Image 1 (cartoon, rainbow, N blue to C red):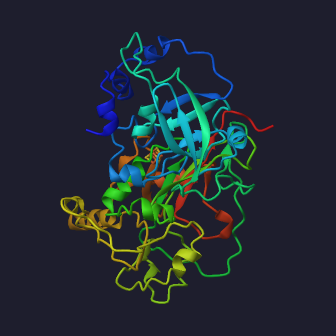
Image 2 (tube, protein in one colour):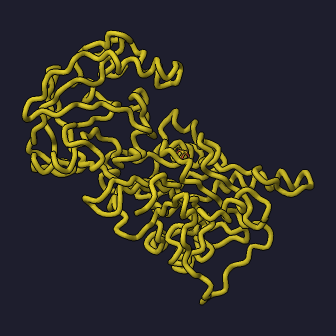
Image 3 (tube, rainbow, N blue to C red):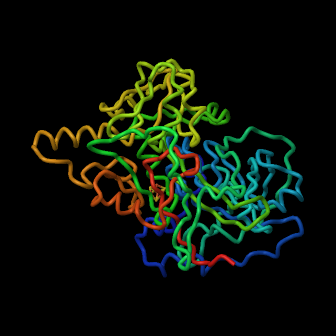
Length: 440
Ligand code: SF4
């Protein structure tokens, strides 16, 4: 039992709602019978305690995978955080990473600030999944549901004076006019694509298969189940908070998130699940001095760990920054060694690694089909991320087969490739989100 669970012994019908075990009306009821909030004082903010995509109501918050993977919207891992708006941050003279002293009638905590432009100027928001949020909530029950009342609490927020290095994975959360994640509308349903007809080099041939992926951003909810599945399938190690503050995240798939075009502009959250794009013109391949990374006849950008000497030229030359480097040997202390996938190597210190489209699953299906004297069927190979995505946003298949689902999706007018203008010829096609609001 965790410390916040010991503190809170109330009924848990709110969490039952989060498992969709009750009707929509029943889920709304706790919020209809909340106790009356007191009038807000001049320096008080509304306390908002919220579930996150990864850790939900917090019951999985001590699981290493869920702590290592950065939160979808804030990109914070391992640490608790308190979200405040840019206006509140200016008033308190704090920036992301500065400690905030937050107090309510129930308790006091010190939590690092995360300045988030999506928050109202009269609120401070803490994610569930640690003792901090629960320490601030008074033991007030909602009259109708009997659950702990999560809102109607006022909090005083002050600058504590100290600063920590918050493990935040994001670089800039803005697209800065680059339109990296384009969107479409009903009246303009096609993404403009660059003209790549001028070739400088002979492109590689893929005589039998060209394994490819299509990711529909209109379906993606940002739940990160695909990211967790990738950790599990590919023996991706958890490096811990010390590595996280240095930006040493080992995930092969991450959810790239943008909050808008420029700071201070319209909040426009866009998500892009980003893994190795298995490029046709892969910038990582010609720079490897030991040929540890090379292009296969099936279009995969393979990585031979035994050849890698750790120069990291490949990671520097990758425009997608999807290659990771093992700064230390991964530890899978007993009984965690039992979770390892025997079909995938555990990489040692000093080598680069990245997504392989779950090549072990590709080989298994290819061998199975060969033994049965038949071609690999469309949809037969399912990488771990695609298998786990509840929204069915990820489709995998053979781009050489014009009848495959992945080929059909890649032909859609919504299709685009990440940083297409640099002509890396990725095997991943994204389908742009459809905005309901028309551009002016
Ligand atoms: S691709 Fe699917 S599993 Fe991954 S974040 Fe989006 S909805 Fe979740």
